[in-house]
Amino acid sequence: MISKENPELKLIDSKMPSVRQSSTATFRNVYYANPLTGKIEGPLDFNSVDNIIQVKGKAKRTSGLDIDCTGLYVIPSIFNTHCHLQLNMPSLVADLSDIRAMKKHRNRQQLQVLTDLRNLGILNVRDAICEDLRGNKELEHRFSLLPFGKVNIYQSVVVSMLGSCWTPERSLSDRLLHSVAGMEFVPYDDSNSGAVVFPPDADEITVRGAVDRAVDERGADFIKVYEQRHHKVFFKPGAPLMSLKQLDALCDQTRKRGKKTVFHMFSVESFRRALASGADSISHLPLDELLNDEDLQKIHKDVIFEPTISLALDLSWPRSGSPINDSPELAKLDNFRREIMPYLIESFWVDGLKNAVRKGYEKASSAKFKLFGLKNLSAPFEYHEKIITTGVANLKKLISAGTTISSGNDGGIPPLTPSSLWFELKLLRMYGGLAPEELGPFTLRCATVNSAKALGLSDSWGVLEEGFKAGMIFYRKNPLENPDVIGASPYMVWDGQTLSRNESID
Ligand SMILES: [Zn+2]
Image (tube, rainbow, N blue to C red; front, side, top):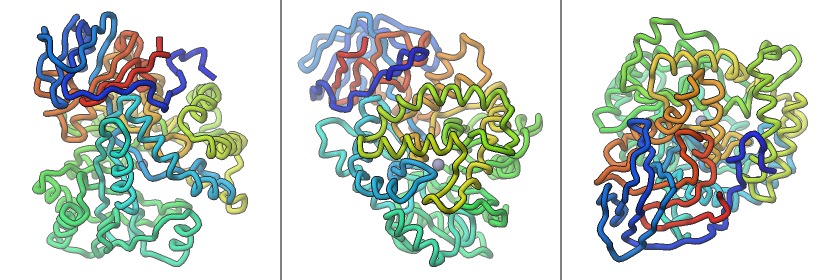
């Protein structure tokens, strides 16, 4: 099952081989891959006390764990800035037996995702959207009962007008869809809803009030703006966007509340609206047109891009009549997908769902886009398939313009899970147009400092300096020369209070 081309793709051992808890730990003789300089420092000692790095340099002997790491490399813990923790749909073209399996194995799959996040050193994740906020709180609680440290979950809450793409008027078919998928139907004004709505003609004060409600009542860490003129599920055009006045009020109020905005978009129009209104993060890539020089010049240094390029694995497929069929990028993606799919399924899905994920892959690769075996569901694929062509061309433009890229994989959209961040980093390297010597430093920056900035955590995470959080991932290989190790199973993870070690990694 281990890929020949990517020897770092080892199976993830979710059994947590050895776990040791301690309030202090000293790691001696480590080579630190510094994300800020893209260089190796060391050998250094790191001393961690109560989750914080107290000494970087030469540590004294202390009580607690004391480990000589001769020959090991260390990086700060990594991030997934865009994922959906509650989604565990095994396929976008599921049939009824897949839905049954999903409901039956939901708890185990979600817990495996959190366990894998911890084992891979992905200690901070942003949940990009969820319908029912209770689900993530419950997940956090269940995870806290396990014998290792925390994965921090940050919650985005959508603020939008009623009738927009993400917040349509609730219909009977909407309720029906929820009940088939085994999801709770939560009205927008319920305090557990992941979306706050305002009327289409809302004035500035009402929009600001909706932002306040998202922060105060729903506990939003981020305000999500869902910019899309195509409705969900069947992607028919006609979904309205909020007015520029409403958008400006929303962004301004979010800033006033000390929070950040995240924009969902797939079009150049929304890319421009996001930039103009002062978005903090912009998710996905424009698919309808290429960005022009003026667009690139308007990007200010603090905005962060979250390409979620691995959505191409889920949504870009050859199919008859598709404009992307002959693109070399698609051919390359197809080869890669064929190579990694068995690994992805084996490592990231619980036994009860593996078959459903495999079936979904086989259906999509033979262009059978049917939901429940009946309804034609090619619309989402048609809408998103240009991720691998126009999207990739825009990705290259953003990277060569020197913009800040964070690591989010949109996991939860099958077959990717929030823990399978490796694929995002790999695809960024495959399609980003980077020079060979840039691959390592780029990957490291993206998964650490850039993502910490995206989550507003630059003061506490993203580098291993004194006073920062002591989330540490140890590898046998130099991650700057072998960026394929980042996001794959490490040799050791220290989350600030527990150490897990995976002896099978060489
Ligand atoms: Zn998403």
